[in-house]
Image 1: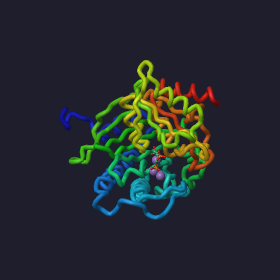
Image 2 (image 1 turned 60 degrees about the vertical axis):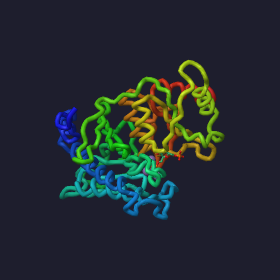
Image 3 (image 1 turned 135 degrees about the vertical axis):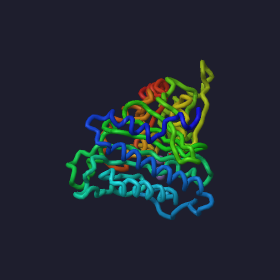
Image 4 (image 1 turned 135 degrees about the horizontal axis):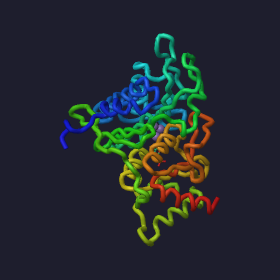
Length: 336
Ligand code: AHG
Ligand code: MN
Ligand code: MN
Ligand code: MN
């Protein structure tokens, strides 16, 4: 297929604008700002090795993680793109201690949307030229337009998401997102700087043969997870499954959605809620998973129905092909 016959992301966003009742085009402008910021981050990630932006900053973020230079840069790029284009009234980010209120419009805070973001996912992979990503999640504010945003605007259940998506800076760069009508993927043509619709209506196979988990933590896992892993490795039927773990949630999810698989970041000794963040990572990925016919839970409960209590809350995460997640949940219930 030639470039000319493919639909661009810009055209797609405009075409879908009418899906939203009373649409004012604000969400379209917001998605366009994310599209632009992703191209800037893509440029920085691509030249990271020659631009002195590899390595650590020397700080830890509120999560207690070493911040990488690209964590900080990507955070700034997204916050700048979203705030200067006046398309959101507030942003919360994995890399920022607290949420940010954005004044927009002549009277301030007139936008109805807030964005939650993991600006650079998989940052331990930056220095070794392995795929990283960005994850975003969009909600309608619950506080009054025209007033400063409040914490409750960000602490909404995942079921309330208006849109969510990720960018994968991989062997090619893609943006994959949903507004609640299925999942579509767009590939960047770097020579033109244009995203084209390359993966319409993406779906998780009902089951697959890949399991993705950091098995280095095995001895600290709950018994249900250990038993499920043994099941994955057993010689029976279509098993043993294949183990694939990149260590970038975005890339592991992307592969599993295309090939069929399950991603698990469970609780483990000393970390009863695992590692992944409910608001910046699990909710957006869970929304995408469900929209693609997959499933996401904490091992027992649907991720999207968890009531958030704090911005940087963590949660165990089981996500992927529906039959595989249900099988893992079965093992979790047996040893609860
Ligand atoms: P981030 O780089 O945004 O902090 O996220 C890292 C997350 C996720 O992308 C990945 O799947 C997981 O942490 C890897 O953790 P381990 O190194 O513990 O396996
Ligand atoms: Mn991090
Ligand atoms: Mn992450
Ligand atoms: Mn991150």
